[in-house]
Amino acid sequence: MENIGTITKNVKKILSITSDVSKIFIDNENFKKHLIKRNHQNMISHIPKISQYLKSPDYVGVNPREKGVSLEYIVQVEPNILIAVKLDSKNGYFYVATMHEISQLKLTQRIRNGRLRKVDKR
Image 1 (cartoon, rainbow, N blue to C red):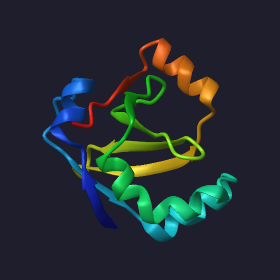
Image 2 (image 1 turned 90 degrees about the vertical axis):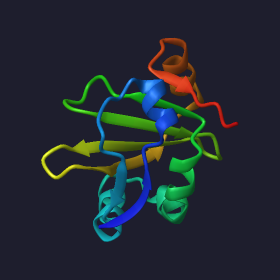
Image 3 (image 1 turned 180 degrees about the horizontal axis):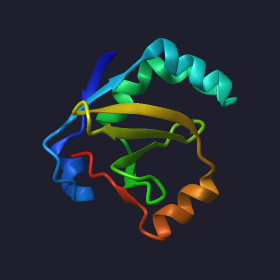
Image 4 (image 1 turned 180 degrees about the vertical axis):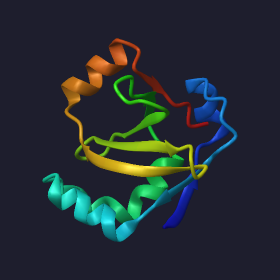
Protein backbone atom coordinates (compact mmCIF):
# COMPACT_ATOMS: atom_id res chain seq x y z
CA MET A 1 0.00 0.00 0.00
CA GLU A 2 1.31 3.39 -1.00
CA ASN A 3 0.23 6.70 0.54
CA ILE A 4 -0.75 8.88 -2.42
CA GLY A 5 -2.41 11.85 -0.75
CA THR A 6 -4.91 13.13 1.75
CA ILE A 7 -8.51 14.21 1.92
CA THR A 8 -7.99 17.97 2.13
CA LYS A 9 -9.68 20.21 4.68
CA ASN A 10 -11.43 21.94 1.78
CA VAL A 11 -12.94 18.66 0.51
CA LYS A 12 -13.95 17.66 4.05
CA LYS A 13 -15.65 21.04 4.45
CA ILE A 14 -17.46 20.83 1.08
CA LEU A 15 -18.75 17.32 1.86
CA SER A 16 -19.32 17.84 5.62
CA ILE A 17 -16.98 14.99 6.54
CA THR A 18 -16.21 14.89 10.25
CA SER A 19 -13.72 12.00 10.28
CA ASP A 20 -10.19 12.76 11.48
CA VAL A 21 -8.87 10.21 8.99
CA SER A 22 -7.37 11.85 5.91
CA LYS A 23 -4.61 9.68 4.39
CA ILE A 24 -5.38 8.01 1.06
CA PHE A 25 -3.64 4.78 0.05
CA ILE A 26 -3.53 2.69 -3.11
CA ASP A 27 -2.45 -0.89 -3.72
CA ASN A 28 -0.94 -0.33 -7.18
CA GLU A 29 -0.57 -3.97 -8.23
CA ASN A 30 -4.07 -5.06 -7.22
CA PHE A 31 -5.57 -1.79 -8.46
CA LYS A 32 -4.21 -2.40 -11.95
CA LYS A 33 -5.66 -5.95 -11.88
CA HIS A 34 -9.01 -4.49 -10.75
CA LEU A 35 -9.07 -2.03 -13.66
CA ILE A 36 -8.38 -4.82 -16.14
CA LYS A 37 -11.03 -7.09 -14.57
CA ARG A 38 -13.63 -4.29 -14.70
CA ASN A 39 -12.72 -3.49 -18.33
CA HIS A 40 -11.27 -0.06 -17.47
CA GLN A 41 -7.92 -0.64 -19.22
CA ASN A 42 -8.07 2.88 -20.63
CA MET A 43 -7.50 4.15 -17.06
CA ILE A 44 -4.19 2.32 -16.52
CA SER A 45 -2.24 5.17 -18.13
CA HIS A 46 -3.78 7.54 -15.55
CA ILE A 47 -2.56 5.58 -12.48
CA PRO A 48 0.66 7.65 -12.15
CA LYS A 49 -1.47 10.82 -12.14
CA ILE A 50 -3.94 9.76 -9.39
CA SER A 51 -2.07 11.68 -6.69
CA GLN A 52 -2.23 14.85 -8.80
CA TYR A 53 -5.92 14.27 -9.57
CA LEU A 54 -6.76 13.82 -5.86
CA LYS A 55 -4.92 17.06 -4.99
CA SER A 56 -6.82 19.09 -7.55
CA PRO A 57 -10.23 17.63 -8.47
CA ASP A 58 -12.80 19.64 -10.40
CA TYR A 59 -15.75 18.14 -8.48
CA VAL A 60 -16.24 16.02 -5.37
CA GLY A 61 -19.21 14.17 -3.98
CA VAL A 62 -20.44 11.35 -1.79
CA ASN A 63 -21.78 8.13 -3.29
CA PRO A 64 -25.19 7.66 -1.63
CA ARG A 65 -25.42 4.02 -2.71
CA GLU A 66 -22.43 2.87 -0.69
CA LYS A 67 -22.46 2.03 3.01
CA GLY A 68 -19.94 4.02 5.02
CA VAL A 69 -17.95 6.91 3.61
CA SER A 70 -17.45 6.65 -0.15
CA LEU A 71 -16.19 9.74 -1.96
CA GLU A 72 -16.16 10.56 -5.66
CA TYR A 73 -13.46 12.75 -7.16
CA ILE A 74 -14.06 14.00 -10.69
CA VAL A 75 -11.30 15.31 -12.91
CA GLN A 76 -12.19 16.89 -16.22
CA VAL A 77 -9.52 15.64 -18.57
CA GLU A 78 -10.00 13.66 -21.75
CA PRO A 79 -11.96 11.55 -20.87
CA ASN A 80 -13.67 12.76 -17.67
CA ILE A 81 -12.47 10.54 -14.82
CA LEU A 82 -14.24 9.45 -11.63
CA ILE A 83 -12.01 8.21 -8.80
CA ALA A 84 -13.85 6.43 -5.98
CA VAL A 85 -12.21 6.73 -2.55
CA LYS A 86 -13.58 4.67 0.33
CA LEU A 87 -12.95 4.75 4.06
CA ASP A 88 -11.59 1.62 5.73
CA SER A 89 -12.86 2.53 9.19
CA LYS A 90 -11.51 -0.67 10.72
CA ASN A 91 -7.92 0.23 9.78
CA GLY A 92 -8.29 4.03 9.77
CA TYR A 93 -7.46 5.12 6.25
CA PHE A 94 -9.03 5.96 2.89
CA TYR A 95 -8.16 3.93 -0.19
CA VAL A 96 -8.68 4.28 -3.94
CA ALA A 97 -11.38 1.72 -4.74
CA THR A 98 -11.80 2.26 -8.48
CA MET A 99 -11.35 4.69 -11.34
CA HIS A 100 -13.35 4.90 -14.53
CA GLU A 101 -14.59 7.20 -17.24
CA ILE A 102 -17.73 9.23 -16.54
CA SER A 103 -19.73 10.62 -19.44
CA GLN A 104 -20.42 14.32 -19.75
CA LEU A 105 -24.15 13.57 -19.46
CA LYS A 106 -23.75 11.71 -16.13
CA LEU A 107 -21.42 14.42 -14.87
CA THR A 108 -23.93 17.14 -15.75
CA GLN A 109 -26.80 15.21 -14.11
CA ARG A 110 -24.83 14.66 -10.90
CA ILE A 111 -23.89 18.33 -10.73
CA ARG A 112 -27.50 19.38 -11.36
CA ASN A 113 -28.95 17.07 -8.68
CA GLY A 114 -26.36 18.16 -6.11
CA ARG A 115 -24.49 14.88 -5.81
CA LEU A 116 -21.30 16.57 -7.04
CA ARG A 117 -19.97 19.92 -5.91
CA LYS A 118 -17.46 22.19 -7.63
CA VAL A 119 -14.09 22.51 -5.92
CA ASP A 120 -12.68 26.02 -5.69
CA LYS A 121 -9.06 25.64 -6.80
CA ARG A 122 -7.80 28.96 -5.46
